[in-house]
Length: 336
Image 1 (cartoon, rainbow, N blue to C red):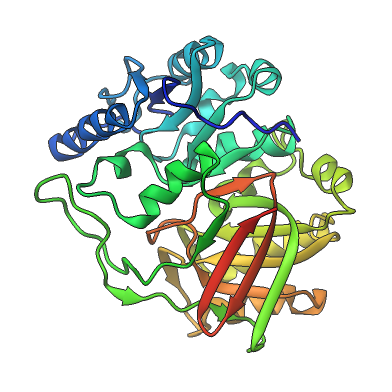
Image 2: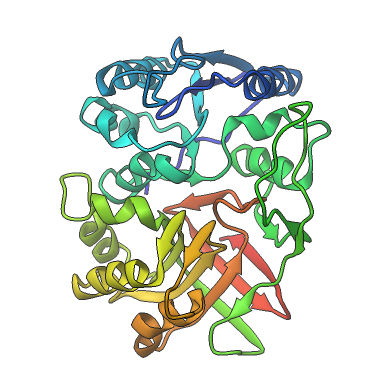
């Protein structure tokens, strides 16, 4: 596994819009403040020209244009980290233009979530290069920084190796008023062990992301899952998954597809984030839907963890080896 070098003061962080561009004034204000605050931490921060552009679909440009701009950061030897501006729906359009080969030979931290699974997942599974499934750059624009944002920078600086579940999470959408808001404390964080175990402990190699995105990558030239799981089968695999907008039947069919393809054969366990939007016409819980497919694998399964769209979220180094412990509604993820 190619692990990028940890960031050092004076390194350059590149910011780009891999999917949606940022045109909302408060979100622009937040990102501009993120750039200032990262600069205050001792980093040079540069942004691509597409950052504050948006077409009729919300995209910051065509796939070719977005690919060209991320390649400018990939080919820049001073850039040691690339942070996404936002998610969206059309990140896959830029995949054919991204110089993944170069990025795997000169690895630098790519960070993003949601639609950015399009980049994180092939980078890890096909090009054997670690990447961070974590917050977008805008979160670095909150004032003051909360612990999850400190963790996000600490992980790529190499100063944070152990992540502790957070106290509260956002269960609803909140509109910005100043642009500098932190995470809202809507509900208490309570991890759930799938079979009501007192404690779960899982060790293995991390892979995953947004399930809504992973499923349309499966079977394409950007799906390196089989190579990845076979290479690291002696470590075992920890699947970390979360969903943006899925019904129970969709979750069941997609997990069944991955299971039937053999993608879970070396799984040591699963950890699921809090789903942003979930619906069941039969009143089936999210946990029941997942367990109906995965229960017979007889490996630990954790739900409601700090991963994904209902922030705050862990910065997950996909491709890294880690140990996860879940007990009494709280959890720890430690990189080993």
